[in-house]
Amino acid sequence: MQSLPAPVADLMLENRWFLATAESCTGGMIAAACTELAGSSNWFERGFVTYSNHAKTQMLGVDAALIAAHGAVSEPVVRAMVAGALTHSQAQVAIAVTGVAGPGGGSAEKPVGLVWLGFAVPGTQQTEIYSECRQFAGDRTAVRAATVQYALQRLVELLKPPRTPPG
Image (cartoon, rainbow, N blue to C red; front, side, top):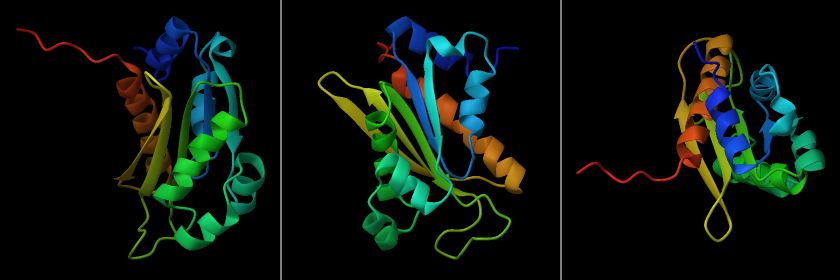
């Protein structure tokens, strides 16, 4: 069975890109999954574990006013996190995640399992930043594991060149 980050590694190596991660709710699990793969130093540049709001500001340059206005678990913050991961690394590709892993900390507006993901990928003219929100089910362990799996799978989808439909 192929490891979860193997397709990411293949795309990084093929394009001579490096990956950086900026993680809050997963606490470095995406970086850990990537670096479990032998030879990951050829494509994995660095990981930022920015669990606190202060860390997001200090390490990634996320504006404290942005966090105050929208909350750490929000689209503007995850977009700033992924942009900051690129700015503060030598990577060309980045993943950022921020969410409510639980069991506490959820609200009606931001329930347990809500995760914002950000992706920065090379575009034709410039780096493109994508963000999306997902709701994962289960306990803290399940939410974090689902976030790692989804983030790596989604990154592969975003990095693969468009395919011409058969016909």
